[in-house]
Length: 243
Image (tube, rainbow, N blue to C red):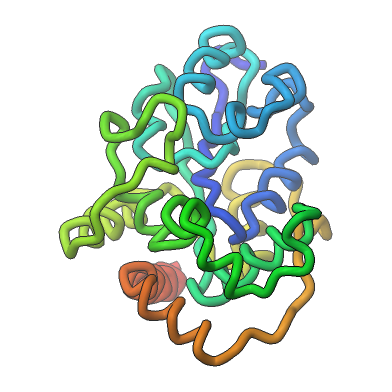
């Protein structure tokens, strides 16, 4: 490996194809180059979310890590003493939220008989991983995060937060839209010499009908994310037009 290797920081939003992006990186990089891997512990609450745990493992594995792909907000990249290419994928917020709810039903035995709305009403899920999740991932500052909770730290929903999130998206070295994932990945691969044209699609969920009133609630509760996605979509198309 070179003395100054290219490293990638994936702002891995919940249910926007971040796992697929991570797994496509595996076609280029060995397991030891990915954070997190098995050496970082089996407790995903720590390895995927805890800022303190990431920094502890970075101190141990800095020289071998080439891709950081936990659920860490964009501001965390400034705490790592190395240059990174920052990347992310955004998804329409209603579809993202419904996919998250379906995923919870699939992975948690106790939730399999619950309705999507029952899962949506769970205070922990709603506050930490549903309400304006994408805005939080791009707007929250590193010094605002709880040491063990990272992105689960609650923040206020304000126009200023949306402005910060828009600035965060605009600052990314590369970003894609989940409905156009392959286009994003192929462009990223071409730009940075990654293995491209991958058919890997990970951690997907099967569609499930959602009641109209739940969709309306999601739209109301995620107004900032709706505005952020509209901004990202416009920015993406503008950049595509420039080439």
